[in-house]
Image (cartoon, rainbow, N blue to C red; front, top):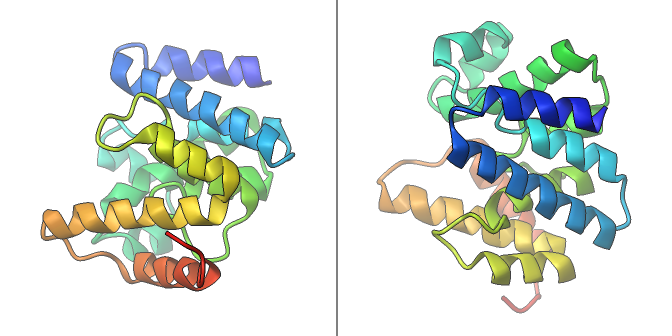
Length: 190
């Protein structure tokens, strides 16, 4: 199944080599972290391959796959539509119903409180895959290999700092997730 999914992703993103390079980087990074944390590599492989599957699709196409509740919840943050629509598209394309996989896709944009290990791995891999140029990906990967929760917090801080520089207000969901991981990491050296 992984090879079929990979082939479908490669076919869909063949006209956007940078996006495809990013997705493959997330996939490879997530597999390495799955091995470190001794979790099902297939779960993170599927989620990481599909995490940006609908990213280049028009918003109108993305919202066709969403519930009305999801559309309303993220109307001020449409960047999340691609995560939700990618999870739904995976269900349609490959009949994937596994909640661990689907949630890892749905929460990859800015994370959430109480993430599973699969969600954390995909979330952090999206930041520390080696093709990213705006951060020290090696340092973030090394941190993730030692302490995934601290790497989650660092990734959230990167997003919040970016939003602040752009004068964009973070969502309440982001702030709750950040506060949760601040508490989880309370007392750790950062």
